[in-house]
Image (cartoon, rainbow, N blue to C red; front, side, top):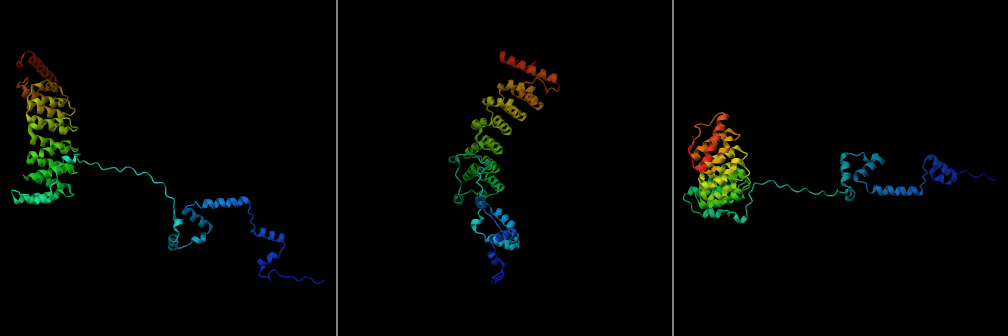
Length: 365
């Protein structure tokens, strides 16, 4: 019997192709020895599927990180190549789930000092055509008016304020219209104040409605100017508007209002001034005393006597002077310097007041 010829495993294309001719047990031993045998169970398949499902939800950064771990050599690129690779990434791969939109906070509107005046009460604006057709007493006034009109339409606050002051020197009906309209519309308190001052300087009754509306302006400076304007333009007829300002929130406005009411010289306004004698501000009390001294009403004697004991010495001294003005009498030639003399002075005034109420007006002893 002839021996079977030996066939080399390398004769048919190498040892990888010849491995199939080895017995089954030898194949398993070889695969185990080289670590290439992979046994995938049913649980392993489900685990791989689950991992693939999670990978679908990865973000762009997570995918890039995993690729680095799996194949570090693939990421050893120049910065330019990396940038080009990112640009060539499909749009679907670049998509990132955006966070839910956050509610936008309400926009805070800047606090405006523009007075709230109904549009129906505002004076109409003066057009350039009206200014060109107007006939002024002097050519220079027309030139100044046209320039002021242009400046009032500008953005600079100081320029608009100067233009308003210039219009206060041009005695013309259009000046009142321009100032009244600007006083109601301009966002700058400084410009509105200059408009009120200019209307007061013109002295025309047509400007009084705009000045009275300015009494309700949000700016203290504008209200101060308006109080003076109402006094100058309306005179005694403006008393109702001025009385309303005695309750203004600002001490300065109340002070100026009290002084203006005192200048009106109307004795019947005494009762409106008396509450100011109880003001927490010593300046307001002093202004009220000055106004009562101008009105010279005996109805103010008792409240003024009470101010002889005011905690502020300037108020005590002014009360001492006002009592002499109202009654025409003097208990002391000069204000007493010591506490004992001051108390004696108060007692004499009160005694005199009681006698005056009961049996006429005896002269002080």
